[in-house]
Every structure is written in structure tokens, then in C-alpha cells.
Image (tube, rainbow, N blue to C red; front, side, top):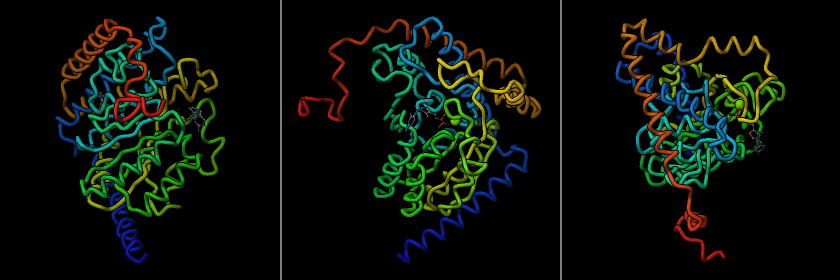
Length: 357
Ligand SMILES: Cc1ncc(C[n+]2csc(CCOP(=O)(O)OP(=O)(O)O)c2C)c(N)n1
Ligand SMILES: [Mg+2]
């Protein structure tokens, strides 16, 4: 028990340092990010934005199977956090997971084809938008049950700790998950076991249709709960990709070095409704306009050009991203419908199902 307390205390100090460190970097105006990293993050955001626009157009053409939850407006969080991860780190996402999977480098055609239910999709057309999984890139699933992924992410973090691999698990969640029991269970155990896990709460202000503030006892649903579990109440502007990148780098680095878990609340806004069935008419016009003026993409473009990057270099990135989305769309559309024989494959880890039936 005393060992555990000592580890907890060391972790708390490291986390306090992380908070101070992130603040200092933010005060330096974000210029600590080198140009190659900055352009890489811009590229990721541009690709995601255009992918999501295309996904929406494809719905309207009735080509996307099942429902879809777009991450438009939240690109800076996926881009900044993924940039701070090592290649062999693990990632858990929600049903709103296109952004994160693309930012992690999963081929765009595979993601697009999955939305279209084609055999060349990431899950061979059997998962759809809500169930993107790419074990080769450490993405251990997309979870549609709110909060479920947090406790499973603890398992992946525990495994890495047990094996001594220095891999960190990054687990994304929505603000709505903070009022689910699994959120509290997962945070408690992550701290008790000092797991190398970083939880990123994307507070986009709404759950399905209800503002998170209407049903939550504290102002900041994640950050204000963190201290109850001995964690720093970290909050970041989720529409500022460099701030996200810097804070994520600090806490992921700490977790890798054995300082234990962290929880970040990234403040953001989704540009559209909850899912394709939701026109989001319940949101006040002024609120939407206010957030649109903080759109992470034009905002980062302004930061980069003010820093001396030629706008034509950014135009070129946007053009290449558009071409990539065009190519992915064509390749996805050209993919065959999944064959019936595939229906019962990939169900169990051994690729079979016979023992159960
Ligand atoms: C345990 C559980 N309860 C209810 C739902 C229905 N549901 C689907 S999405 C959602 C809202 C989640 O909001 P949030 O966590 O803020 O994520 P966001 O959609 O804003 O990204 C709800 C309640 C569910 N999927 N799982
Ligand atoms: Mg939400």
C-alpha cells in the first residue's frame, strides 16, 4: 500500500509539472512547434475536413450505409493528439471516430469504402462508420456504447505496463461519457494502478441533443472531476491544434516515463448535428456563429501565414488533400459489395466462429 501511495504522489507531482509545462509553452505563443510538424498537422486537418464534407455529400446520395457521426469542427484534437503519439501507441475512439483514424494514418480509401459498406473497407464493409478498427496502427476499436472504451483502454494500458513496453494508450471520449459510471471507475483504477493511459475528453458542448451543461453538476465535465481522482484538471482549447499537441505531448511523455494517467478536457464544437438524422435546429444561432468564428482550420491557416508560411504552400496542401479524397471516393465506389461468405469471418480473434455455434 505504501508503495502505491508513493507512486501516486510521484505521479501527482509529474502531473502538476505537466500542467505548468503546458502553460509555459502556451505562453510562448505556440512557436515551439517546428515547421514540418506544423505543416503535417495542417495537412491532417485539411484532409479530415474534406473527407467529412465528402462523407456528408455521399449520404445525401444515399451511398453511405447506416448512420454516421461527423467530426467536422473537431479536427484539431485528433490532429494534435495523434501527432504527439508514437507509432506503437494504442488508441481507442468513439462512434465519432473518422477524424482520429485518419489522423493516425489509416488509408483513406479503406475508411471511405467502409462507410460505403464495400469489401475493400477497413472492416470489409461489415462495421460501417461507427466501428472503425485498425490493429496495425494500434487502434483497438471504436465504441458506440458511451463510456465503454475507458475501462477497456485501462486493460490495454495495463498490458503495456506489465510487458514493460513504454507504450501509451490514448482514449478519446465525448463530454456525455463523463456522466457515465464507467468514466469514474476507469479514472479511479487508472490512478490506483498508475496506468500509462491518457483520456482525452472532446467537450463539443452537446451530447446527442442536450447541452452537457444542463445535466452536469460541475462547469467543466471532465477537468472539474479529475481532481477527485488525484489528477490535474487539465483543460485545453480544442480548436487550437498546437495547444492540443503541446499538452498531449507533455502528458503522453509523462505517462511513458511512468508518471501515470492524465485526463485532458479539450473544448470544442461540432459544426453539424449529432448524426446525419439531426439538423441541429436546437442550437441558438448566435452560439453557432460564435463557434464558427473559432473554426480550427482558418484559424490555424492565419497562425501559420502570420508566422511567415506562404499561403500558396497551404493552398497546395488543401489541393492535394482534395485530390486524395477524390481518389479515395472513386476507389471506394469501385469496391465490390461484400460477399455473403464473408458474413461470419473476422468474428472471433482466431478468424473463425465454429466453436461457438
Ligand atoms: C450507454 C449509452 N447510453 C446512451 C447511448 C445513446 N447515445 C449515443 S451518442 C450519445 C451522446 C453522447 O454524447 P457525447 O459523449 O458528448 O459525444 P458526442 O456525440 O458529442 O461526440 C448518446 C446518449 C449510448 N450509445 N450508450
Ligand atoms: Mg459531446
